[in-house]
Length: 190
Image (tube, rainbow, N blue to C red; front, side, top):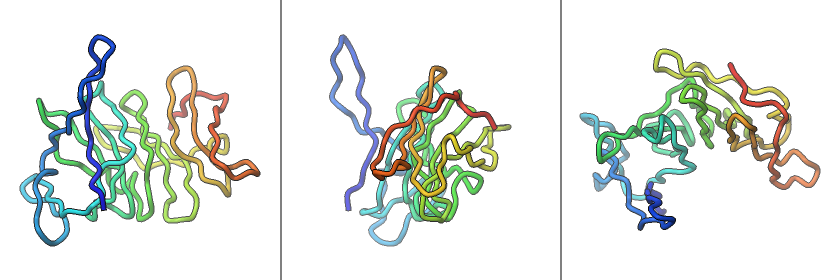
């Protein structure tokens, strides 16, 4: 199994720098056997555990949300985050049970550092779009978005956008292929 990591590259004078692997606390430390565990703030990973998927920047580039199936999470794949700490990044933190379920969560997108949109199968067959609001530094219980964003028998996921519009992917059409949709309404508040 491959271990997917996060890299960064800087654009200077219309040219991208060579990608550099992010220094994330505890991620480069390994135990030879056993599963990951948190010990004194460090996450020790056993080789072969999947890494970082579908990352998104937030908090002015000082936080990265991503999906991982670290065994110490809430369920299948969970949404995690890391914070910039000088020249390195913090140990991964799980968003907790108000966002992550025993099922699969993925495709986090943060608006204004206060609304978290993501997809979840919530332990069922299809992915649906949810939103959680940050209050007093904590994410509230996720709310299912309305039928503009979710269909009853299809996968709806990967919502992204800005103040001008939203886009998401769904296989809700009869051809059952993934298509990009742009609903007429803007960001949804909770």
